[in-house]
Image 1 (cartoon, rainbow, N blue to C red):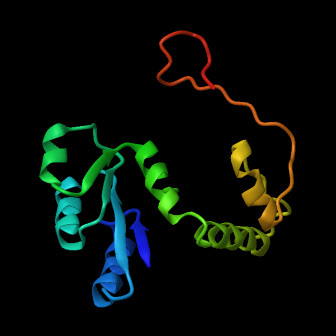
Image 2 (image 1 turned 90 degrees about the horizontal axis):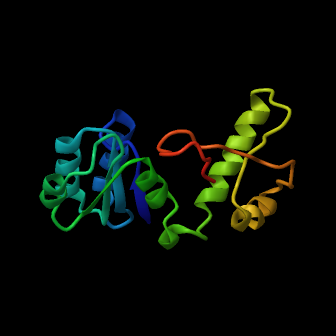
Length: 152
């Protein structure tokens, strides 16, 4: 089984990677991430040799990228989304298991509905889990816009 361990330098990530190290015949690390702990992430990459590493809270750096060698180092929160939803790991049931668990957690917490927004291409995925179309979603991005025009 191939894993992406987000927050690899934290306590849960460390525990997860401990299990991975004990069962190399069962688990392979596909991606590791950290917010800003580049040195700790580099050590983990040398040990587990993932295809990708993500530093979500660090500005892009060629020097850092070189240090990671064969592991492709990515930067920013968009990179987290990219490795978490990588096509190589789609269709294996992990996404629907996570969504079902979150819906059950909402039920247990007394929530009477769960509403999410998704792209048109993901409607079939959420429909299989039991979601149905609801309202319209709108957004305006204000950060990073050079003009007053809204981006979609």
